[in-house]
Length: 164
Image (cartoon, rainbow, N blue to C red; front, top):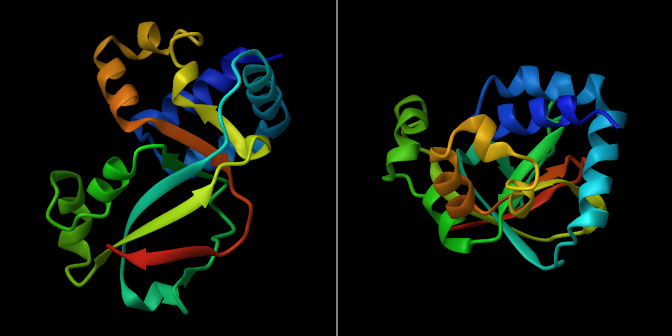
């Protein structure tokens, strides 16, 4: 089991480092990363339930209230906390400003999806066991615990979206 590759993938995803490079890293190391995720899931079980993803989208990206999957995106970040997702979908929030400058007509959307354990690559409750707070710095604890991040394998299926 290659914990180093798994930590590299998760750390880069959590910190937002070059998502395209991290998608490629996941593709190149899929077996090793999924093996560690399966181990973590067995050792530290999680509850299935509804998870959320907040998005800023322009109307051209939406067809019949759905968002088509993008082939090059290999994982998706969700949260267990609906309020966190709504913050990501808020056009006036601080985290949205960079995108809103590029796409001023974007609107906020919410995805609600049932969490299936077999799709999980990372769950925020594993962060301490993985030593992420030591590696990423103690400041990361607040962010990770607040965001309640859940990373899923991209299933190449349409996501149902609704305006916030």
